[in-house]
Length: 515
Image 1 (cartoon, helix red, strand yellow):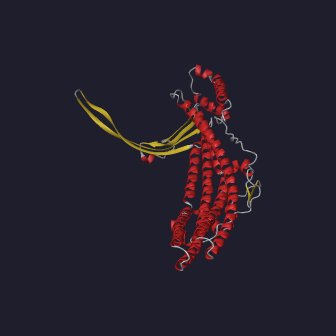
Image 2 (image 1 turned 90 degrees about the horizontal axis):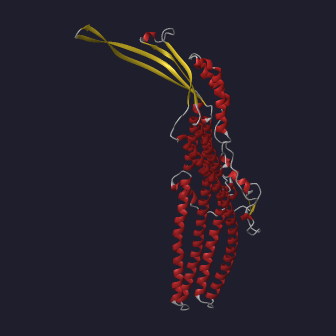
């Protein structure tokens, strides 16, 4: 992919043809040994070389990615779901607003502005932009100023015979001037460097966008986890209250002699077991608050007062557009970043290839030089200048240049393979998220039915137990089952929301509004 199309051979032929023409024109001067036209010869060489100027190396062509026509995960699940996925155009600019939770929306907006990972990514974008400026600087002439003061002492001999005396004489030199150098980018080495730096800048921009996608997903996931833990705490406290009431009834029946001590021990054990789970859930909820604080670039406990109050888990929207697989390649920032990296690697092949060809320079200097400071600015006596073109062409470098070209070729191949893997991973992410989201809805539906049945079982068991028509073991089993299914339903509701966030993240949503 992206290989030169006869570039090196054609350029070499063109250079040889023009060199032969120049030599034929100036042949008499060379034969006669008259080199007064040498400067004109060099200048004409440059003028004839300029029209042939081009950027050597392969031209970048965006890699093609094969994608399926439809999402497999969308058609391997039951079509009758409370929240359906459709192939309608995706609107993921601010997907968190689909949960209709103002607290969640506010947290994501604050994180986008203040998150430290995003700010680091912005710094890398500025670095890449500055690097592009560095790469483009050689296209312009370079001018250096210099100031020189030099004092030296010469010698002369006086006397005769064996009596020779050395007398020193001090001399001073004052000099100021400007030196200029301009490399003519005939074969495009500098332009390829700029192209690579521009692609690096694009990769840095896409990297920042990828961090935004991840950040929004992390904030949403931690927020839903927090609300899920809070709901689990509420369920545990509600069941704990019911179990304490049951234990109190059991104690009174024991005192009246209707039940044995075993029922009392079982009731007290159930109360203690449920009570022991609450501190663990509270610690998990606190950890989620701390994670949100850090994601917003603040101290871990900065949001404790704001988020400690219990709130329900945000509901999922009834319809989730996911678009077509072909749209994913242009939307996911990690794929766009991988493409930019392929572009940069391709351009660097041209940078390495340009080292095979001659480099043309225009150099000159202008200044004033005098042995006396008072005469330094005299245009008639102290002025000096020089100007002339020059050409350098590597003759022998121990195979370094060609080895570097092979190195850049291999790096481009690696970048292309990384691009292909990124595309496949993105497709896998979406397919997995689609199936997980759909199956979790089925799971939630079954758990809701189980909770309703267990609540009826608890009521019936308590009525029979109070009437003395069943033993306490049936009550105990019914309460345990109810607590377990209610907790599982809460976890499923939370997982349904986090799976939807995973789907939004897999689709690459969340960066467009900030770009």
